[in-house]
Image (cartoon, rainbow, N blue to C red; front, top):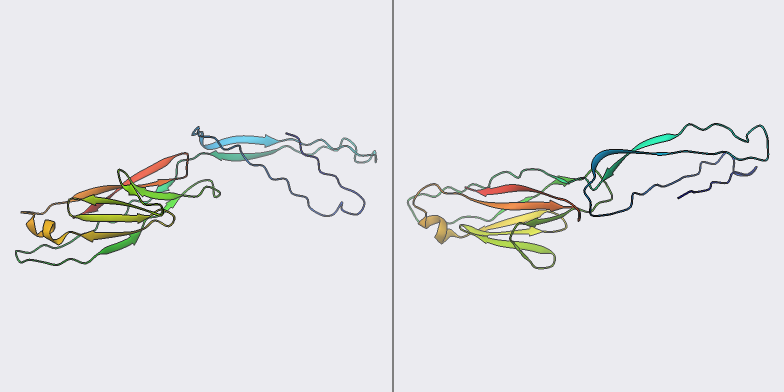
Length: 173
């Protein structure tokens, strides 16, 4: 819709701001779409009436998928003895082309507890804080010690902006 900026003899030298916000929807339009603004100058002063202002082109990143950085694998060393294992912690990281999009982190197939998501895997439990991406893996020493050889398990972790989701594997070795 049209916006009107009015400049007078008292505010003509003060910059005025126009904010353009794309309408949020659930259709992933992707990054790099272009849009434009055009201007029409109307003035009682004939010097400025009809003044030409070049159109302004800009890029719209409409529902671009967040980019989740692949997390480093968590590794444990299991010997022939009965071992104990420490919890592993870290933070998932993601970016979104639209800086206004809040990113929520999770685990595919996990149980949502409100502010965290958890999932029990073969060798322990992964918990992710939805708002920050902070995670902890609590190993199941009994299951790791019982493994007959080098084994691994992967959790699928996610980052969502509410319209699109990216996923990566967090592997436990």
